[in-house]
Length: 251
Image (tube, rainbow, N blue to C red; front, top):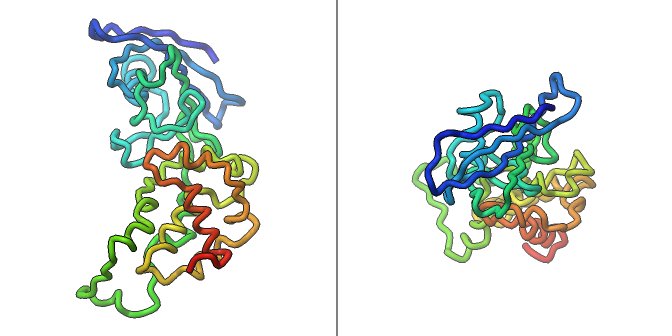
């Protein structure tokens, strides 16, 4: 694929330049991916996403990238940045300490085009673990009923409720790279989030759901998922705690 080098004319005296290498691939007609290079200017606060959007605006409108909130809340702009899964809107170019910024689509996800990948499997597996409170009574019918919890009960799961479903943990997981049927760290961590919630009564059904060869026992505890999580969810810890329930060490 031909390389393109361009320089924006609009930049402040304090701006520095960096080479932005963007992976380009359209599975509909490309046999393999390639890179296009752009010379862009950035300030100390410029994010990788802003640099990509600058390329789209001034140099190549066809660059495909998914984004939305731009404040690390929606989880849309996950990608591989200089070899590591990160959110583009949460990654400042100045903090990468490199003259070259390489962006690629996330691993372990089918590519739609360029930096955009398909999330269908992530959402399907998330839905399969029933990400909602399950009750075995009729109390949920009444709009006058509150399910109060102590601070200690909330502490058991609140960290795992911060998941934004960005897919970075699944992208970093070495097991997902070798087992396409593996449920993945995102879904397992969310299974723990509800199992640990004192209001939920669906523990047995969730544990049965993940107790198979492509479920919780397929995790080798590499810890890569927790290293890349932008919200500090720590899926690896959630999986280990979930195993405690599986083995009867927790109730």
